[in-house]
Amino acid sequence: MTSLDDLPIRDDLRGLTPYGAPQLDVPVRLNVNENAYRVPEAVALDIVQEIARALPDANRYPDREFDALRRAFADYLGHGLEPAQLWAGNGSNEVLQHVLQAFGGPGRSLLSFTPTYSMYPLLAQGVGMRWVPVPRAADFTISPDAVRAAIAEHDPDVVFLCSPNNPTGTAIGLDVVEAAAEAARGIVLVDEAYAEFAHDRSQTALSLLDRYPRLLVSRTMSKAFAFAGIRVGYLAAHPAVVDALRLVRLPYHLSAITQAAAVAALRHSDEMLSRVDELRTQRDRIVDELTAMGFDPYPSDANFVLVGGVADPQATFRALLDRGILVRDVGLPHTLRITAGTRAETSALLAAMAELGAE
Ligand code: PMP
Image (cartoon, rainbow, N blue to C red):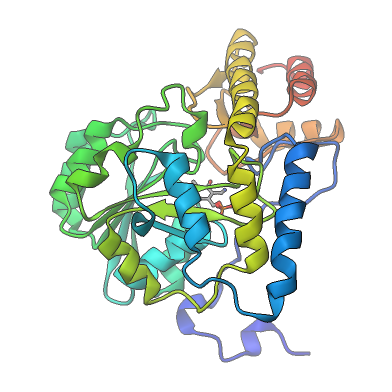
């Protein structure tokens, strides 16, 4: 029987494991930072109608430039952005891949501050880049000085700053982004997948874009817009950066159905963001109540909390799973990462944690 090892696979892919959290069908799924709320029925209906309008033309390739969608993203983000500054892909993972295909590749390096999003090293690997992990401070913050020192030491071609950071929830100040943009000779990308969940939404790197042509900001509809299943991520940057990304995308990479669905959903951003507010409330509730129970949650600006002070994460993971609750063990000692759920899901999680106790 042929196994992967028997195939003439690239040497640098041998022995690697694919990205993947367990996909288990349990009542309370708090493991992959999804939006806990389903797409509201009225919004779903509008999306279906937009798709229905697009469908008879499905014999034609879709708009390769996805003009309507880029206009909708520019309007949603504000900050004076023009459609020519917007790019999109099938999830922000694909957008990040486009960035590395255009600005990274063999002989080049990607620097990030760890622990951070586990896809970065895999995306670097996929395009044959060197991955340079630089540890964060013990509380998972990054200072402007630390950024300047890391960039001076490693001279990376691309820097990914994740804010709010997955899996720690840590937001970085704009002074940190400025320090990176000024120190780096290459591309600096701020991954703002969780930006809408931040305590202070005004602290976005979008506000720095006109000052730094090599600064890129990526976002996703997977989290705030409850669109993880549709696969839409996007990026804002200088129009010349967008021209570079066109060189590496596959032709017609965004289907007409995806474009129609995203344009329709963006019309309902106010309603979608009101659910984000409820999730922020649950996120803060997890931090407050677990602190009172003796756990040690890290401050979070995302829709999840990294909970420290867990004596035996694997045992707690299993005990929660026995109660129908799925969380994530990201491999950081004495921690579990828990996504904010609906009020009822969060109550179930907190009741189970109270029962299990901090020690
Ligand atoms: N960036 C970060 C920090 C993430 O946590 C995720 C999803 N877990 C992504 C990007 C990618 O999300 P998507 O491809 O669904 O947009």
